[in-house]
Amino acid sequence: MKDTADMRLERLLAVAREEHIDTSGAEEYFETRLLARIGELRDTPAWYAFVWKMVPMFAVLAVIVALSALTFNPSRKSDMFAAITNSQEMIFAGSYLAGE
Image (cartoon, rainbow, N blue to C red; front, top):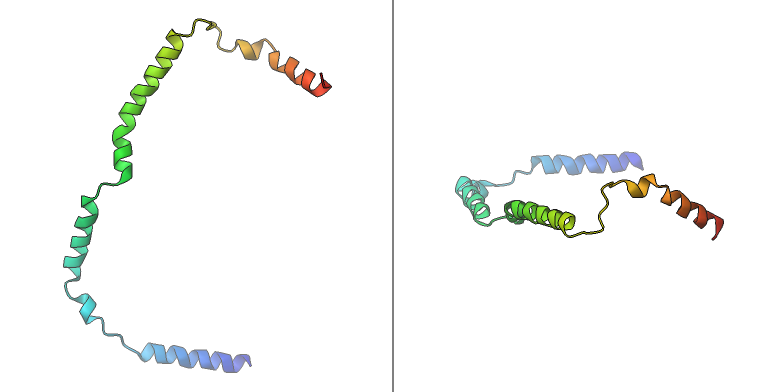
């Protein structure tokens, strides 16, 4: 059965190889159509171009938020790692694991 399937496939491929498709209609003015399509794509701005233009504004906004957080937070401690170094997380973890 496999031999007949292979022979049928080979005959089908031989017929497909002999068939010549006329592409002369698609070949005419191909460069003109291609350049028109490229020009059409260039005229429409992409969404990422707008995002890149907004990056400086987002950076300024981030700086403003950071400065205001540092300026208007009266309960700020001078040691930013105080919560880590005073072993509070170990106390909480121990009480959680003990079920308290």
